[in-house]
Each structure stands twice: as C-alpha cells, then as structure tokens.
Length: 74
Image 1 (cartoon, one colour):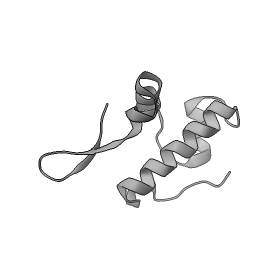
Image 2 (tube, rainbow, N blue to C red; image 1 turned 135 degrees about the vertical axis):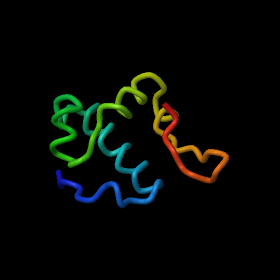
Image 3 (cartoon, rainbow, N blue to C red; image 1 turned 180 degrees about the vertical axis):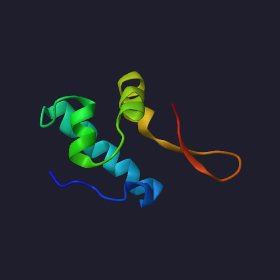
C-alpha cells in the first residue's frame, strides 16, 4: 500500500474515497487494526473507523452543514 501524504489537503470527496480504501483494507485483513491502517495510509483512522463500525458506509458520508461546510457525520 502507498502512504498518503497531505490527506488533510484532499477534497471531501477524495477523503471519502480514502476512507473507503482504508475500510476495505481493514475488512480484508491487509492491515491489522486501525492503528496499523493509520501508519500505512498516513492518516488518523480511529474516529471515523468507529463511525463506520456503528453506521456502515453511511457513517462515512460527508455531510454539508447549514454554513456550507462539509463535515463527517459521527
């Protein structure tokens, strides 16, 4: 796997794709736990991994708030 640098600079859609890639790696056993996924992908995983565990793919969907800002629904 390739480490992602500057993930904070990705668009909301790109971050969503990255999250899905990390989840796929976790579910397939290519990485062992969210700590190793964070190391491999170079991103913080814990918060949204737990959101995924609670709500599935819908837990990862970026939402736009009333101010037009995009945020994660947790």
